[in-house]
Image 1: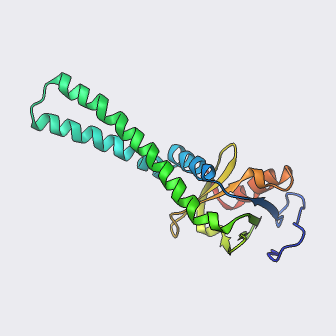
Image 2: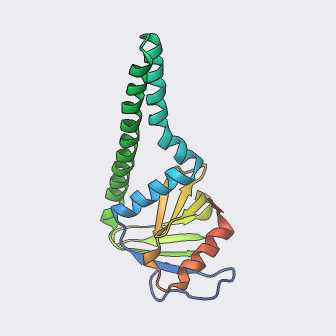
Image 3: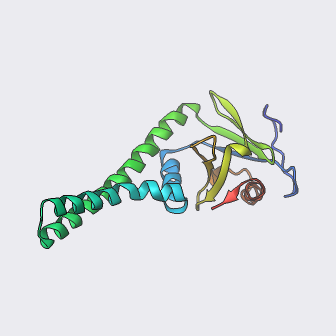
Length: 183
């Protein structure tokens, strides 16, 4: 895989095809990725439901220990659980902003991906990633979201708007399907 710049490699969707995406990441990209992870991955759902379930359990235990009446218990649940859901959503937004603040200094990114992995070159840094770093991926209307495997708990994004050719989105999907599990 050529990572030194120059023209991107555009071939058919056979094994060995490389695709190039050029984009500037945004906080909205990370928020979309984290929302999709919370809905579609088991670990994301567990993380998103932890606060509301804990709040419901705490209200229930406290109500039993205090011998609260049924209306008091019900009102407490009706107030507490939505607040916990709201806090979870706010937490995802905060996490997305923090993730964005880490990659924002890299500026515009160029990603070249093939069956071996992906090489990302930013204005100030570059790195390469073998597909074994990620275990699975999911797709949203605007992103491909790579989810970390055993050796990585991270979330990587690849915005579709960065495709140099509309067919590159399909080519990347083919590469990801060959190398990762789709959620």
